[in-house]
Length: 192
Image (tube, rainbow, N blue to C red):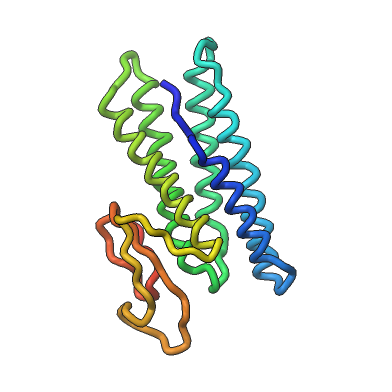
């Protein structure tokens, strides 16, 4: 019944650390990005704590889990709405995908557990969407720390290799392998 969040809270903390480094008071856009990332990280960490601390013996455990997942989906969608500075454009589509995947996971978990009978197939699909969302958060964390994700399912496309290459561009994008979509014109990941 319970969802294992593993090191996700720590990864969200890594997002905060990276956003702190990005802000540094250089300009209003980066400061705003820093503040919004800090807020997302704090809220997501609190929700991951709620998920990790649900007592499975409680009469309200199921509804507590589903409510926390709904909250997490809302927080991930807030992440997707954050205006990303050009320096971090590679994370924009990843944030959108994380939000979409977490929303799908929360909806499917409600479907799997909300009916009269538990639906194992729907729960498995929900878990897959949940894992996809977390994977994208991991990628975002790595990118914000100045690292390139090294997962075998990722294809790195630089703007030099992408259609519509812009001479002044120096950013690097990523593409996740489980979306089946190609990177956008600026080399950033494409949503499914």
